[in-house]
Structure formats: C-alpha cells, structure tokens
Length: 387
Image (cartoon, rainbow, N blue to C red; front, side, top):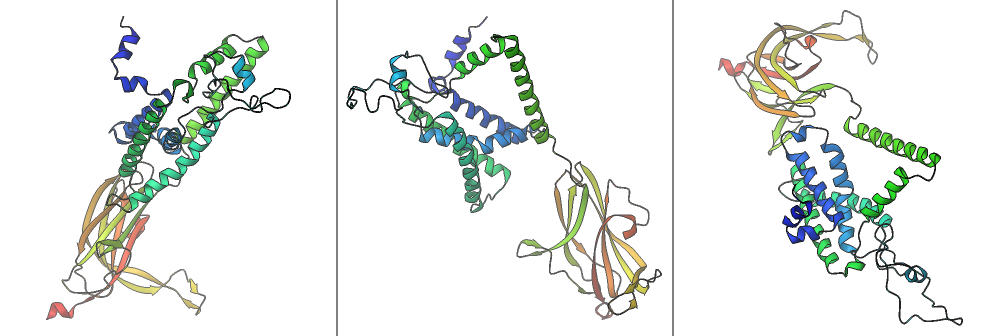
C-alpha cells in the first residue's frame, strides 16, 4: 500500500505549505466553477448551494485573511505561565512569549500582565466580516463588469470573482508565510475533531450521550431542511409569453410598430417567446392575417361611459402568413426577426401571432384556440398596388 505521506510529498512545496483554510477556499472555488461550467454538472441543483457559499463567504474570507494574517487574541500573562508551546486556543489562539519589560504597579503586578495582547482578529470576527465583505465585494465586481464589453453575465462574473479570489488567496498565503509560525492564524481542525470525538463517543454519563445524539440529529435535520429549501425551491406560476418588438438603433423596443403599409410592402417584426413553464417546451408560432368586422356584442354588454352596446370583433377572412418552431428551456427566451407581408388590403387588417406550447396546432388556428397571442392592427393601402 502506498504511504499517504509519500503521496503528500509529491505535491509542490507551496501547495504543501498552503494553510488549510486557504486551501479549502481554493477547493470551493474549483468546485463552484465545475458546477457552473461543466456540461453535465451545471444542470444539477449542486450549483445552488456551492454558488451561495462561494458568493456570500469566500471572497470576503480571503480578503480578511490577506488583511489579518496573524492570529487573534493572545493568551494573558497567567495563561502563558502555565501553558506549553503546543497549547492553542479555539480559532487559532497562539501562545505569547512573556514580556520582559512590563511596567509594574505598587504591589509588583504588571499593568499589562493580565490583559490579553491582540495583534489580529479572532475566528468569530473573521466569519462575520467575511459575510459582510463578500456581500460588498461581489456587487462591486458586477459594477465594474457593467462598464466592460462583457457586461453583467454569469460567465464574466464567475471568471472575475474567481480571479479575485485566487489573487487575494495568494497574497494572504504570502503574508502568512512571512510571519513566525507561532504568530500565524490557523484554524484548529484537529482540536475541534478531538473535542467533538470525546464529547460524542466518550460522554461522562448516559444523559450526556443522549443529549449529544439529539444535538447531532437536530443539526442534521436543520441542514437537510435548509439544503432542500435551497435545492428544491417552491415552484412558481407556470406560463408562457409571446410578444412582438421592433429594432431601433440596434436595440429591441416595444414601440415603433408599422401601422400603415402599401399593398405588397413588408414590415420587419421581431417575435419574442418566453418559457416560464419550469420544463423544456416545444413551441409553435402561427402568423395570421385577418379581415375583421365590428358587430354589436350579442351578450348586450354596455359601455358605461356612453351607455352604448360594445362592439365585438368578428373575423370574416384570414390567411396564414408564416409558421415558426423552437424549443426553449425554463426561463429561456427566443427572439426571431422576420418579415410580415400582408396580402389583404383595407383598414384595420389584423396581424396575429398565435403561440402553441407542446405543438397541438389545430387545423384552423384562431385566437380562441390558444391562451397566448399578440396582434397588430395595420392599414393596407390598395391604391399602390393598382398603380
């Protein structure tokens, strides 16, 4: 069997010397990039918890590690007197050397002998500041990207945040290596493990053992509940959308639609389809031109403003102009530029785009056969065709 120490020695010396907490940040950074960019893994819910951990904690933690490479609270004078060089406090407290030039008061007690000397911040402060700084750093990176050609998109944000994390991690490691070993900040993983193992496997009484088991069970249940809520969020409303746009100086806008055309003249329209069905959907869009007539509403609905019976639009003639098909993932949009050339003439010709999710287009598609449609009223001048 290959000795694990031999495998460890195969790694480059800077990797072996990298502090464990900074090594963990690099592992999380690698995993979140795999979860975001790997073709198969990015479709799984794994990217959600990894992404939250990366965005909300890692950039701030490595930034704090670069600012404060030294340990947090040092031991007081009494603690130093009875401590050995191997005794460490939780969150990396280091044993301080005794002072040689303490100023004494009247009874011979050093003024600073009982007060802890601080040269950094402790673990709890690091965690709190890591969350706060991460929430500040990530938006600042997005703001900077907004003024670049790449813009605020997933890939540029991941690359920029990863680059920031790697650069700051390198600075933090170099600053920590420049300190004496006894002054460096470290996370006492082994002490935590031994303490937890003793509490769980070697309780002082059966009651302590039962309480420890209940504590572990409650933590597992809490983590499972939070993970489930993140990975499987409540499903919102399921719907699709169809709309039309026009192009203005290279931008798509919901304005400037053509309303007056000559016979034989075409108009450029950009068709838009959005999928919010929480699944992959095959869409079919049918484009119709319709001649319509206004007749009194048979239901007798009255317009309260002038007490007149509202008219109803009745289709007297229609023709299919075009048909498009596309497949969209959940939360995906599709824009398709195409030309519309009506063959009917007269006033109030209606151009209709009918959206049919999952196919199922009837033999005579109308606005009554689908829940999703959009239309445009145009006037077609037939005199141009006669000339």
